[in-house]
Amino acid sequence: MGIKKFQHCNSRSGIDTKEAAYIQISQSVIYAEGVTPVKKPAPAFLQNWIQELSTTERLDAGVLRSILKQNTPSLEDLSAWVQYDHEPCFSYGRSTLWSSERCGIHVMTWNPGDFTAPHGHGEADWALMYFLGDGDQRVYEVSGGQIKLQARQKIPAGSVLTPHIAGFCHAMGNLGSKPFLTLHIYGSDHHRGIPTEGSKIYEIEKNRIRRSKGPAFLEMAENFYIDNSTEALNCDQETRQDYYECIRSYFQRTGLDARLR
Ligand SMILES: [Fe+2]
Image (cartoon, rainbow, N blue to C red; front, side):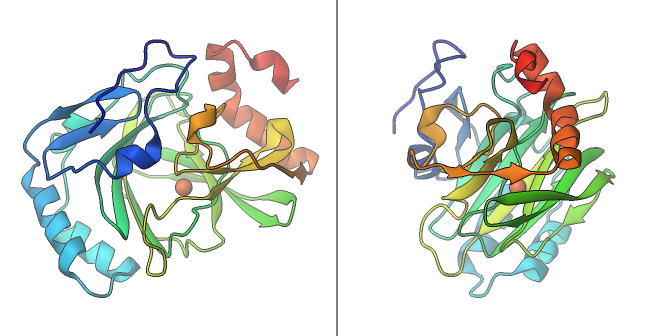
């Protein structure tokens, strides 16, 4: 297992997501993007989840909801994966609790102004998102090289979302004033490896689509992309303006806001 730490935020080249996903977690390694992995005993909820996710033959949104209901983590349970102090260059905090050949569990930390790029979910067939605070979501319709805003949503604390993940495109983040966490499970029935591998990232500000190894960071470092392929992306003015409002805080804190005019 490679234990690495980013020397400088802008380099963001220390940890490869694929490498991270295959770290032998053995219920004790806590991994976060940009942070040195540390060992700590897994809380009971996670041990139960790993047991269920490893032994249940057929997994789907209903099973995931049931697993969450039976083993709902508290904020304290998730404290080891929280990244309220994540580097400002990361547009949100992303920690991996556990991953296997067919699913992965993540905790995302959302400080005020944190947001993802609009993105798909690669090879995932099922997904669950549990909001431990009030969040924001944008849902998009995508077709070829076109993306269009479909819905602006406030997601209240306690919500559990299990969207039909194939073809689902969204962005999420924190347009409020308080940090919060979300817990995510992604899995695939047909793909062996990282379920979100190959996720399309719709970089509206660059008029392009790229493919990720899993994360959906804004201004993502090159090592998080699966390859260097690029597709052209178009959108209408309403979609672009709404997106720019969602990501403006991040671009301001990283000194890139001139790009959004
Ligand atoms: Fe997502």
